[in-house]
Image 1 (tube, rainbow, N blue to C red):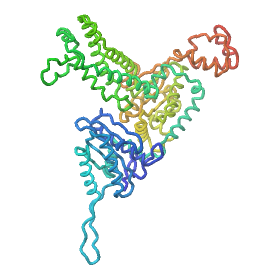
Image 2: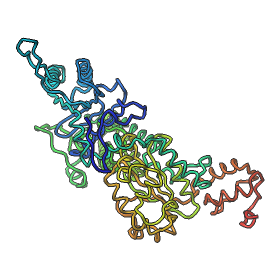
Image 3: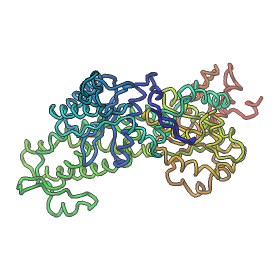
Image 4: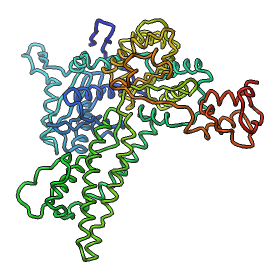
Amino acid sequence: MSIGIQNSTTAEIDFKTVRPDSKGTKQGGFEEMAVQLFRCQILESHPNVQVNRVEGAGGDGGVEAYAEVPGIGKVAVQAKWFTDKIDSSKFRQIDESVRAALTNHPDLKKYHVYVPLDLTGKKGAKSPKGGAKGKPSKSQRDRWNEHVAKWKTWDNGSDVDFTYVGQFEMQDLLQRPAFNYIRQYWFGTPSFDHAWMIHNFEKAEIQLAERYRPELNVSGDATHELDTFTWGPSYENRLEHVIDTFLSAIDKFRDNLDSLPGDLWTKQELDDIPSTIERPAAPDGHDEKAPEWPIRAIADCLAGFRVLDAPSFGGANIESLITRVEQLALLLSLLRDALNRSKRHIDDAKDKSKYEDYSVRQLYESTISIQSFLNKSNKADKRLMLVEGDAGNGKSHLLAHCVDMALNQKQPALLLLGEWFRGVDPPLSQIVQLTGWAHGHDSLLPTLNAAGELAGRPALLVIDALNEAVDRRLWSSFLLPVAKELDNHPCIKLIVSCRTDYKRITLPDEFAVGMPEGWGLIEHNGLGDVLPTLATTYFKHYNIQSQQFPPLLSEFQNPLFLDIVCKAFEGEELPSGPIAFDTVMQ
């Protein structure tokens, strides 16, 4: 049975027509859809909980995804792509998954099994000819309940709540407005795929022509900032490395924490500790040897990092992590000062060396290192970004390169050019026309959002050169409403660029006095930080010889000027000394 929804913003739900996954299988598509439904249900009531996806067909440990939910414990989901009746062999498959889940997740409290079929009720048995009616046949619901009773006798199964989520329950969930993007992606947009996004990028690439030269790309500060904003692989790799180093230092320090004395601080020194450092509760009972509260505070702070994995997009808040790291840095600074003071009162050299604890210094340095890195990662939490700079500074190249790299790693991304927008029709309506989207603008954003969630990286909506729109009033009127529309789609990030000298007549008035709430800013100042490398790349590409490196005039920091110079002297030797503009033009 399928349910039809009667307006353009929804899609007909038929689980047999679910969109295949990236490997082309409907089984994989159904599993991904089930995980998205599971995640949405968890986040509805617990928005700060991280839902962990478990990858690997046949090797998922009995679960597709799980989450640690406050007040409940570990909740997990398993999806079974059964398209006909649920017979004994199907129940055996569920048995295998349940056993694996209980073995690999002994602390499991709730287990949801998603199946695109409803459990049947009892059916009366037909009577033999001339005889009385037989007993009613056992229903699938009865068999499910029998299996649940059996699972509860297995190791780790007695306290688990097993829930069957069938076709009816899933269809009911998918009709909720908050789950619209899942329905649209898996059932309403068959034309949406990676090839469609590649095709749209290629149209923009042709239009950009000389403004995007991938073979001449050199990464600079603006590239790294955009990589952080988009959770690109370079940023994720650096983040994972710094967190691994930090967690390793925590492990080494924790081994020595209990050996620290409790009398490192005098009463006066304790009173002088800033009130911004939270005092932890005293341990139960009275223990004369219990450490003073700063050491307990350090232990509590470290406990908060115990389950820290490398944050991923949609599962981590960098600002929140910064706050926790800053608290630890303050506590470790107090500890280092106290240890240094205590050494002056120790006469025994052997005892003195005891306090020269390498693990304290190592953890402090690692904490300062991750604090510095995270402070530079403030753009990772933003969802709206303006790139501005002077004409010819390479903004178009920067944005095109960003989308190109995203698509290469299967991250959903759309690039549109400001010059394509005509008139004052709402931009989202124009985007539908410009991209050839056949399902209306009210389904485009939900679909992009779902694709970003599946990719584990944000879906990028990129519009280059707003100032080149035929009617600049378009963006002064609609930019903020478009940004507001994205509030309902947390897995989409918007990137726009505008020439600095056109900001006032192109952007809404709010940008004239600073950045509106939620917006980040990248100032692209040309090639200042990568000029030597890029000039060498350009000279090699254009086969230009030079007795000395070209004079580093300020004009060379403009990519357009550098390109004009290289084209003027292609295949020749660059004149020595300053290069006059007239010489280039001749």
